[in-house]
Length: 59
Image (cartoon, rainbow, N blue to C red):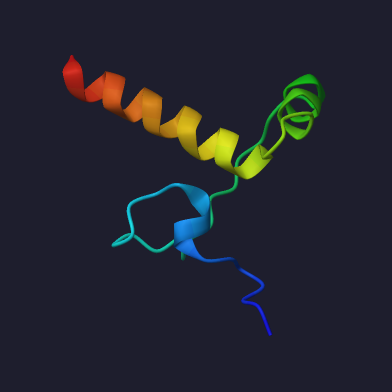
C-alpha cells in the first residue's frame, strides 16, 4: 500500500530531507483560489517559501 503522506523523492526536494512537518497559516480567499489552481499546490507553496527564505539569506 502506498504511503498516504507521499515519498520525499516525489516532491523534488533533497533525498535526505523528509517532509514530516506541517505548516498552517491564513490567506485571503483569492490567494487560496490561486494556489489551488496550480498543478501541484503543495509543491508550489514549498517552492515559494523556499525562494523567499533563500532571498532573505542573501540580504
